[in-house]
Amino acid sequence: MIGYAGNIESRIDYELMKSVAEHHVDKYIAMVGTVTSDEHRTVGLFGYPNVIATGARKIDELPSYFKYFDCGIIPFKKNTLTRSIYPLKINEYLAAGLPVVTTDFSEDIESFGDVVYMARGHKDFIALIDRAMSEDSANRVAARTAVANGNTWTRRVEEFWQILEQRKAELV
Image 1 (tube, rainbow, N blue to C red):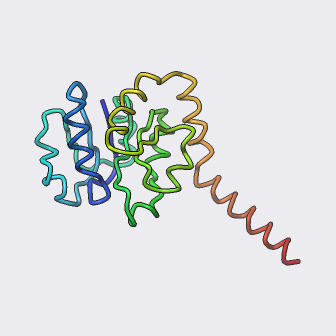
Image 2 (cartoon, rainbow, N blue to C red):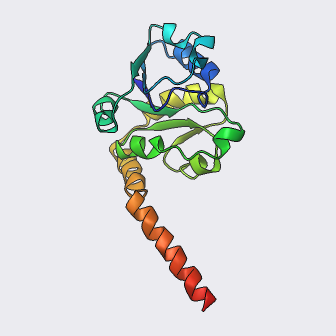
């Protein structure tokens, strides 16, 4: 199962999702989240027999879905809007130990290059899904969860305070 968790809206590359559904007919694609755009209709995404839209789910319900995912995806368009996005779902996927395939839509997502599969185009994205699933291992799960554990809000606040203390020291 290929899984996406998040808002189903304008950031998603629906042409890419159509290609994923058409190429990976042997896999289900679960899209877990609130539908806030009609763009999916332009490609008839939810008409594919292997695409499941679950609707909105609470954050504490996501692990129940993630345990069935063989791969998490972030199929975002690469444009001005997405260039400034930090997708929180990356940490959710990594915390669950999932292999992740993403488009190269922002510098923030590229900072995860050591633990995700970064696609440079539609064909690459489609191929990387199979690769991510076939290369999954206990060592890779451990590496992904370690990155997620270092990316908590508590850790970010600590880093923020360290930066402030450093700046304060430089001013004295």
